[in-house]
Image 1 (cartoon, rainbow, N blue to C red):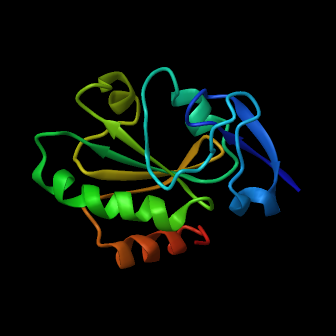
Image 2: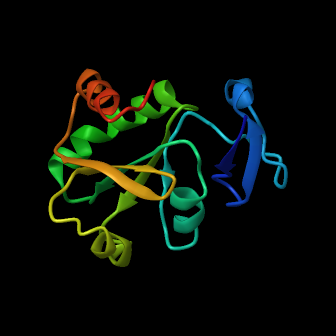
Amino acid sequence: MSINVSCPHCNVTNKLPEPRLADGPKCGKCKQLLFQGSSIDINAANFTSLIQRNDIPVLVDCWASWCGPCQQFAPTFAQAAQVFEPKLRLAKLNTETEQAIAAKWNIRSIPTLILFRQGKEIARTSGALPLPQLKQWLSQQGVEI
């Protein structure tokens, strides 16, 4: 079975056989790795491709630079990207610089985690979670890590 994965570098959608996800696949256009074990910054340019053109689930951390809990959660989210890719794409939304997207998603508190599957929000939670609790929350949403 093939799945769509958007490139974090050039935003092109790549069709891959699902078993190849763990083989270090590269983008067909820009030739860079599709998964690098780090989160992707969401902006107006990559929003559509990242959220709507990925068949793998996407977990978004909505944060701001002035938010203490957001800063405390950042290393956990970075670690999660290393552990959970390629079964889950992790992305960060700076609610200060991308206010239009934050408003569209109705972000009222930060940090807020939103889980998307094929462009649709399937779950959200507010607050910083330790990695084991994050993994448990994802499992409760049907994401296999």
